[in-house]
Length: 114
Length: 115
Image (cartoon, rainbow over all chains, first blue to last red; front, side, top):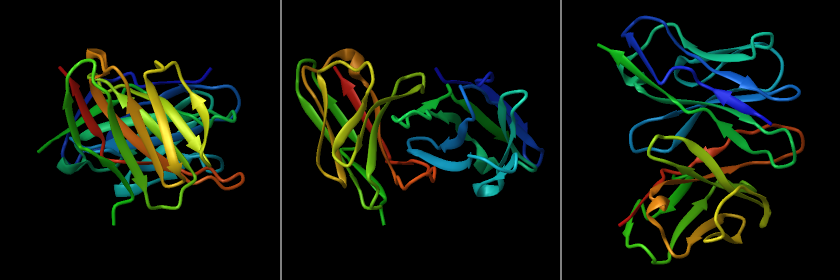
């Protein structure tokens, strides 16, 4: 069975500082990993994905994520946080069986303080 | 142009009623999904349809039934609504093509409140 853990419910960071939102996963075989962002009263927006290849994946809005197989982690990062980055962030792993399901973490609320 | 749309955006109804939520995507995707997001923001897959065939059906009560009239639409029908059905329901779609792994695109959500 596959699962995703986001150990922090809330992350606060000052504007201009680097941010990290943590994600660890459990899946048999090589994982397909995703990050999505949800702004208030909106649907989820895709940020980036790791399928194979380079461990550092670059995505939308200046976000990037680093895949670390030995630590089974896929942390989301940004060098300089903006107030507009404040939102709910979800990490997800895709089921590699025929169902191709997405299993989401519980979400991390990021607040960027001006 | 709206990629994945849902109607209605808000739905308030009483226990025991039957209601439907509609979803349409204009992306030409061939797989569509329904997710439920509870009050704690936890997202859980409910159904997915690929080329009009149900390919996953999680532990969802049979009061919930997805209906797909064509590849661009996946509607969610709910019978005998219960208080615990109150949640935000998201539709999503994805392109499937060989071995390429595509991301899912989500609709804006439908907030269902059962009183």
